[in-house]
Length: 269
Image 1 (cartoon, rainbow, N blue to C red):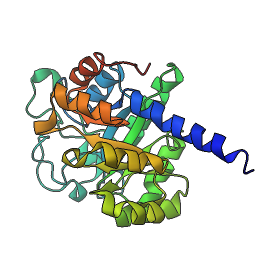
Image 2 (image 1 turned 120 degrees about the horizontal axis):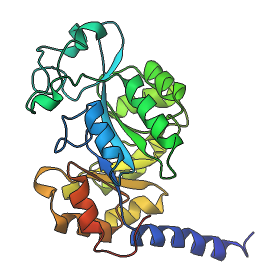
Image 3 (image 1 turned 120 degrees about the vertical axis):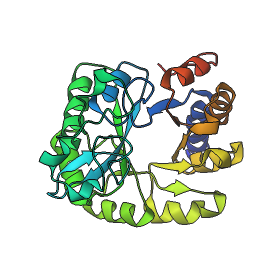
Image 4 (image 1 turned 180 degrees about the vertical axis):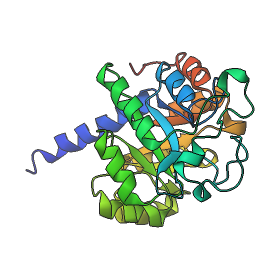
């Protein structure tokens, strides 16, 4: 065994050297609000034709316990309704337009259920070699029904889960092999969070990313995700993240990120 140790260490290091040299994958933040209303079937269908590895969704619960995809707790910003979504039944939610702020082509868009999104991903993956996975932002949903619906459509295994620390602990009790992604503010938190969650990935604030931090996380066998949103949606930031070895860039501008990364080598296929 001792003779194998140097070889194993070299092999382990090579894995993360390759990770650092490869381009990041892309996660579509709520789909792509540039082409269709956020968190709708229209935007999810659109980004499936783009070069994405993940589609991020926000899961909430209606009054009658149905799981739906909506970022805000209230309906006002993105739909024709108002007030908390948790106050309405699914039938009432389905009466609302989710195309607010967009042209007439989207007036008939509805808030999708989690089941509708899972079915879309399952059917897409059945016909394509490059699979697309769900990045699940657990806004207001109990772990048990969330896990059950994802498992029903065969998309649980590859889904990544983001949420509060307490929520992820509860989720792990329901689905011990779930791919957890807690947030990480800085290197000081790393050891404790690795021990607590045994995570698949960390969500690191974009402004906190450094080559040293990315290396420390990779040395634990853990991936690094980060949101390139708002001020950070710029080609120079995408390229810098790639050079640091970031695994996944989450963005509102999928094609802009892809174009920036295509100037770098080597490429993820």
